[in-house]
Length: 248
Image 1 (cartoon, rainbow, N blue to C red):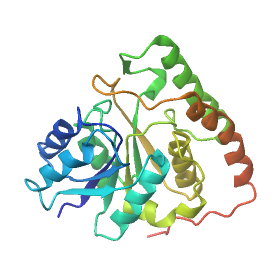
Image 2: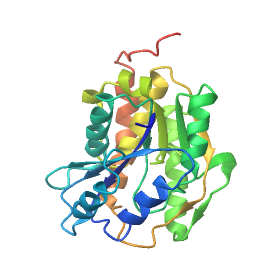
Image 3: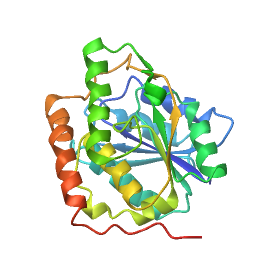
Image 4: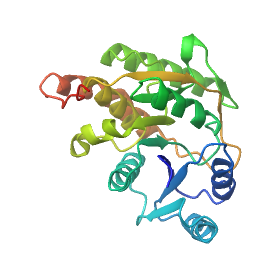
């Protein structure tokens, strides 16, 4: 068993999933993979099951009934992982928008540079590294991150990034039952909570490439959750005690 596992939530990713799994397994470092499939009607889970015969010890699958949201998919994955002996836990999309080889950079930062959470960032140093997005969406995403930074006090530039590595201790410390968001705002809440618990966060620059195969899951409701949810997140933090990182 590897010390590292990549959690990939899926919903209708049959065009991408086999290629993604094989690409991760082809890296020079061994990563296990956990797919959390939300009842994809297109047969994504079936493809994963077929590949499990080829990679029985490295490829894992949790099937859920229906589309229950990105946040709950990751939390289900985190709980599964914490029952096992993994030390480094990654979040990644199935659609190749996140460069797979950057898993190695994020691992390096967390395993050997004393960082608790590494974030694959599109916006390091005020540069926007996004390919194939309409300009309106680039601006919306960039300024949404600036807005989140302003409200929360986070120093992270790419607050909505869904590409990350957590050291095990971070996930053991965060109280999952107090994580409220289900959509993309979940990513903001996890970073903010890790920061409030005293963990160190560092951004690793990536180039984000908009999906080529399959369809995006982004919607207006997801965006408004992030917009108004962030204010609520900040207000609630004033009345809450966060468990703190243990001093080693």
